Amino acid sequence: MIMRTAHESSHDLAQRSLSQKLWSWRYIVLRRLSQFVILLLFFGSAHWGWEVAKDVPLLSGNLSGSKFIGLIPMADPFAALQIFLAGHVLQTEAILGAALVLGFYILVGGRVFCAWACPVNPVTDLAGWLRVRFDIRPTFILSRNMRYFVLALTLVLSVLTGVAAFEWVSPVGMAHREIIFGVGFGAMALLSIFLFDLFVLKHGWCGHLCPLGAFWSVVGKINPTLRVRFDKTTCTHCGECAKVCPEPQVLNLKHLEEKGFVFSGECSNCGRCTPVCPENSLVFDFKPLIRAHNAQVQGSVSVSETQRRV
Image (cartoon, rainbow, N blue to C red):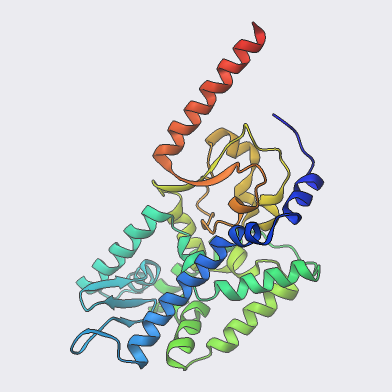
């Protein structure tokens, strides 16, 4: 394996042509498009009367509970869990909707919601980009496990108070309602998160505090399909992937070499790491194919070592 320094890798990235740089931004563009389309479907149905048939909206409701084309119910499983723990009886449609959404995100990766659907994500991404550009240092350090404490606290409060605790104060819900319906404190919530992430703690909200992100991280642990594959035979340990990853702890090289893919549920499959890798050591792949790929690579390495010894 040819070893290259981090400085050489950074230089190579800086020397990319415009078309190569645009290609490296493809996942950012696709994520913004996905977030925009979701909001547009809600907005168009609410304000422009988008319908699939007379009096049947294309997409009604909000991120906590909605219905697509008047037939397919969708519900936030975390919201449904809070409502259930608060002592309320869930309607059959809500249970079905939560099951459908939960099943979808189990297949594509739980925290995919955070990177590809959440309306707060563009705000936190902007704050993160500005932090790097102006070299703003964090005010204090906070464990990323704090979000799991907030998750547990949210569920306990739902039991004790008889209301869905996080849904009352959720910046995600407030932001969505503000954008679609123009009511609530969504703008203030987004501004608060932006300033917190910019001046106080890098990736502070999404990476350290958000209980919804923690919930999807737990779900993401059982993702059986889409993962980021890691090829240890080509990796030069340049560190470019960790620089752009909002959850750099998931790129622990020791764990990656053992598993052959990013297995942590905290990975949001945002795709940032894959285009910046100079050696293409990180790529999206399906989990069953990853095992076959790793077995083939390991076999090739074993053959090469045997030939060298001979």
